Length: 252
Image 1 (cartoon, rainbow, N blue to C red):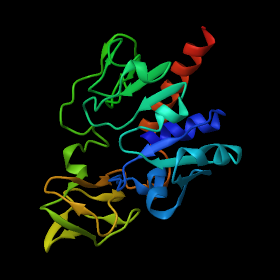
Image 2 (image 1 turned 45 degrees about the vertical axis):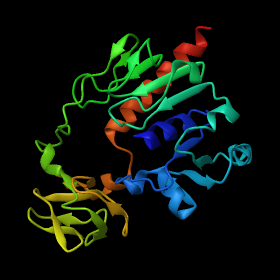
Image 3 (image 1 turned 180 degrees about the horizontal axis):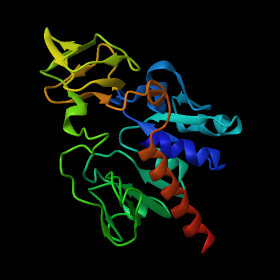
């Protein structure tokens, strides 16, 4: 989600920097700038991101049209960079510490935020009629714990680790699978898909996981090319954030 937002803002000529965990657990790795943490660089639909060691390197990358990605789980770089806009795209289903006072405009994605209280604006991330809705007062839809439906599949499309341990994939992103196929192993226990389709997301080899962790995603539509492009959901949310930013600063 964050990468889709960042991509749209960069294309709209905003200077974007992103912060990440030391070991990101993103599964849609083919369209995630977080892969720069591991590989040093990641490209999503023509936009390049690079891992930087400190906020001092951000300006150099901006001159090249590149997104700087900082390892900064606490978000302390905001005190150095003093951004005009902060978008909390952690998607933790709760507010992990973001406040309205962090920047002139603070936007929260999905449940866990209250617009007008702890952030300025909330964007709805729940699939359906209200996806991308801009909320100026109040929260997004509450977390149901049930993934949104894609081609009639909901919880069945999510692959979860069967136990604690080291993640060993047997398939890769873009592979076609049938219901019951083994996708990965964790300490000798299999992780199989409940539906047929294409593997849209999968954790990296060797990641430490815990039982029940979201470790992969199967798209029942089966279109391999979709695994390598930004999702409709991320594009919708990114468009809403662009609107919020333009409205906020053009009205001042």
